[in-house]
Image (cartoon, one colour):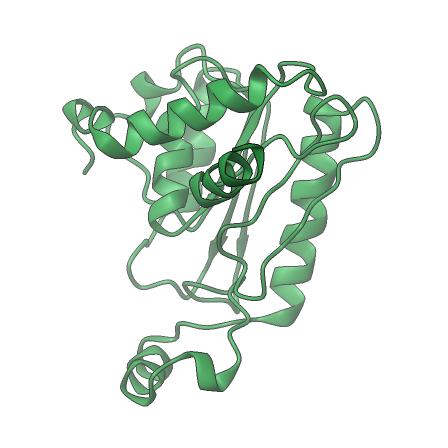
Length: 204
């Protein structure tokens, strides 16, 4: 899972460009957080130890086999997983153990009645019928109670690591592409590549 050479490439370049752009803004303290869901959650795990981030939030992201080595010198990490997630059995325990072994501040929680994608509150019309059928069979989908608790935990954790004022967290309807944290107490501390491109367009 995720050999270390996977920590290079276009996706990481784009994320780093976005982090650098955000950290360099006049209204940013320079403290930046990263948050991801599913594949993005895997990126958040890998980025926690790369430097440049004050906090990382991984939501049902894959945890690499060398996590104990990976998290040496990592930033604080918050993780949220579903106990019924068939794709990631034991991921929460693996993440918790690796962070504890390295004495990294963390908050890792597994929701026993939730599966993969429990933060994604898609409207029925946004998901093709075939995908909805597959999601139902595999236990994938939104779980309101788990999602609300996870979001509140993330806000509190980002507050503790980033805030000059309470964190402003904006969740998209699906929970993906979310922007979280504080930056100078005014702007979000984690921002998607798409947001950065839109900002560039406004500045042009």
